[in-house]
Structures are given as structure tokens and as C-alpha cells.
Image (cartoon, rainbow over the protein chains, first blue to last red):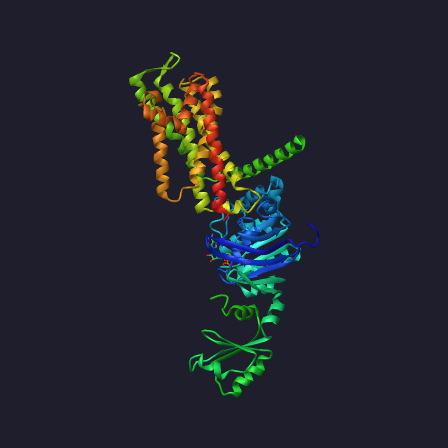
Length: 310
Length: 270
Ligand SMILES: Nc1ncnc2c1ncn2[C@@H]1O[C@H](COP(=O)(O)OP(=O)(O)O)[C@@H](O)[C@H]1O
Ligand SMILES: [Mg+2]
């Protein structure tokens, strides 16, 4: 494998279950040291793609190369250099925290002594030292997630695959996970993650693809995507007096674009305050006004006409 | 050519066995926790109780039994090797059925298959663990047989590796079956078949005393071959047929393992 060759390269990658198409021909490349994200709603095909990259699900069509190898023919050799944190925690409930790591290390052929040492380091890294000898079941969701991440690092992988690393965690637990992932990123570990959280994608990903209905609908850095598919600022308007859709016509011409949501109207404008002034000029009385910067949520809304988290 | 290929094949086989051993290692780690020991111990008692109740009870009525070579032995000595084979079968099948829980409910193998370990190696590793468990039963049972003078120390030592082969066969078969089990009802079917095998494999009476049709049926089922093999050894009645029984059991083990590995791959790597 040459230096320039991407760690992961997919061309026209397809995954079908029966006659249902979960991944409908995607192209992507992930380079060494990158933090790459799949952003998309439930059912977009993120996990199906991750499982193909993780060599636990054979592609139905297209080509896929991971670490320069073919997942179907060299699955075992590829998996030896991957760290996987699946969407559902798959910890061993009959083992303790420490045993989970040591036993897992043995699957990679790591000598017992090295395995023990690495388990201790990783337990410390994910801050589970006090629970090291407890079984897994009573741990909180956040702790289990951290242990799953620790387990994914036990073979010092070239690529770490994280499928929704923080879904279902409370904000505090989520920040702890983000902090650990950020440290990995600083160390130059290649991260590939999926999420349907905008803030997660914005914080962690150097580059991401937006997935919807098994297809990639946009690709770029978070900033590029926002520049390309949204305006600098957004005005969120709520109205209490009449039905929201009656305001759509009245707001026409303010800003560059308007989105009608069930509970609010979004006005996309380079300068939010100017847009707010224009609304006031038309003698419309919103019950609340919020001016904010554009985010990936707005990109997604623009690309698919839908919000990401419902 | 051969000199180049052989070391490579050997290295590959070695890596496979080492990964399978890691799967066995997982079970060893789990067995260190308390709850497991009960399951281990309980599996041993069933054949012992049968030996005591039927071997000694019925033995009091029948007293002696004539072997094909004309020697006579006690009825208990006739039944004991069958109980030994049944015990090896039970140990292997119980562990194989545990795989259903590990695969479908605990979803243990989802994590394992994300590592270099391959489905066949998972099956092999689980089988090796089943053998450890089954062999500990067999060993204890053989010690008891020697103590009750139902066999000699020498023949017990020869019979022990044969019990491992019996366990290997039922482990392979059980694992293939485990990949088809979907519900509690399926477990019940397995238990019924297991019990029928236990009753009709030349266990309590020689198979050639059954009606002709039944005899043929019995001879294609696996426990019959296990019983005949172990009975030949613990009673010291050697004949060429024992090789045939061994070949049957080894073939069953390999076919079972191969099917189990394939089906696990298909079930878990979709
Ligand atoms: N094993 C499977 N069998 C059948 N359908 C599946 C399977 N796995 C996923 N799907 C379907 O494929 C689609 C994409 O799923 P998934 O890749 O999990 O999406 P995401 O991770 O983005 O939520 C969903 O509609 C899901 O129901
Ligand atoms: Mg998913």
C-alpha cells in the first residue's frame, strides 16, 4: 500500500437485504489520520456501510478496499487492524470489565501478558478503574460505551470504526466520550464514525458525508457543507396568532430561502439581524425570534427537506 | 513447491487453532465465575444415577451377561460403558446448546467476529470447551467404574481418549443443530431425540436383540457407535468394528463442525 492510497475506498458500493436496498451505490475515500463521519437519519444505511467496512457483512455490489485489501477475501487480515465499536454494545455479560478487554485481546493473538498490561492502560484511559473487576451488567450506558471503545483500541488499530458512539447517552456521558475520541484524534488515529447528532459531527469530523435513503447526498468538511448548502445565519420565527403556513407568503423575499417546519419558520439570510428588521417592517408579530449561525442541521434540511432528529 | 506450501499451510492452521483457543479461553474465564459450577456438576449426576439404579438394580435380576467372545460379565459392566458414552454425549450437547444462547440472546459472537476470528474457529473453540467439560465427566465416570470393578485401570486409560472422540462427534453434531434452533420448542425436540438415543442405542440391551428394522435405524444413529466403541474398550473386547465406529464418529464431528461454521457465518455476517 503506498502512502497516498486511501485507507478505505468504496466505489458504487451496494448492500441489499432481499430486495430491499439499504446502501444504494456510494463512493467514498478515507485517508490516514482523518476523522471521517457519516451523518444521516435512522435507516439511512450508515450501519450497513460500517458493517461492510468492518468486514462482517459482504457487499452486494460495487468495490470496497480497506487497508488496500478486499474485505471478502482478506476479512480476517483486515479485521486484525480495525477497532470496532458497533451501534449496539456487544460486551460479554458473563465477564468483568477487565476480562472483557483481556479476552478480546486474545482474539487478536495478543500475548496474555501484553493483554493484561493494555487492559489496565485502557481501563484508565476510559476512566473505569474503579469498576475494573465488576461484571458488565450493572454498568451505566455511558460506562458500557466507554468500555466498548476501550475494547476497540485493544489491538492498537489503524482505523477505529464507531457506529453512533454517543446515541442514548446523557449530555455528561456524551461529553466524556467526545473528549476521549478527541484525544484519539490528536494521536493521529483514523476515526470513522456515524452519527445523527449535528454537534457530534461538527466537533469530531474533519470531513463527512451526508447520507439519506442509502445514498450520499453531499460531502465535505462541516464548514464547507454549511457554506455550500446554507447561509451564514438563520432566523427562527414562531407565531402564536395564526397558522404558520399563512405567514409563508407574507415573509416572501426576506433572506435567501425559507423553510416551514411544524412548529417554526426558518429564514436563511447572510445577516440575521437585517432579516429580523425586515420582518418587523412588514408588521408581522412573531411570538419568538431567534438568530443563530447555520449548522449541519440546516444543511441536512436543505438537502433532504427533512429534519435529522425527530 | 511442496516445501514452500507446507510451512505456509501449517502456519495458517496454527493461526486458526490459536484463534479457536482464544474462544475456548473466553469460556475458561467465564467458568471462573461462580454460577457456572452448578451447571458443570449437575451434568455429571444423571448418568451416575442411571448406572446405580439400572445397572445395579436390574443387575440384581439379570446378574451376568455373555459377550460375543463367550466371556461373561456383570450386567452393570455391560451398562456402564453405555452410560459413559451417554455422559460424553450429554456434556457435549449441553455445551453445544449453550451456543444458541450465546449466539442469539447474548450475541457474543457478533463481537468475536469483528476480530480476526472466523466463524469456523468460533465453532472449533466452543467445541474444544465442550470437550474439556465432557472429558471431565468421562474421567470422573471412569474412575468410578474402576472403583466398582466394572473395568480395569488399563482399559479405562484406553477408553478415555475414545470418550473424547465421542464428545467431539456430539459436539460437532450439536453445534450444527444449534444453528437451526430458534425457539424453546426446538430445544424440547432436541431433548426428546437425545433421550430416544439414550434409550435405544444398545444402551440397556445389545442392539442385535432389537427387531431388524429398528436395528438398522439404530446403526445409523451416532450414540450407538459411541456405545459400541466404549463397550468394546472397557470390556476389553477388541475387534475391527471399533475402527469403523471411530471413523463414523470422526466423520460426524468434521461434518458437524463444517456445517456449524458455515451457518454461523451466514447467520451472523449478513
Ligand atoms: N439485517 C438486515 N436485514 C434486513 N434489513 C436490514 C438489515 N439491516 C438493516 N436493514 C435495513 O436497512 C436500512 C438501513 O439500515 P442501517 O444501515 O442500520 O441504517 P442506519 O444505521 O443509518 O440507521 C434500514 O431500513 C434497515 O431496516
Ligand atoms: Mg445505525
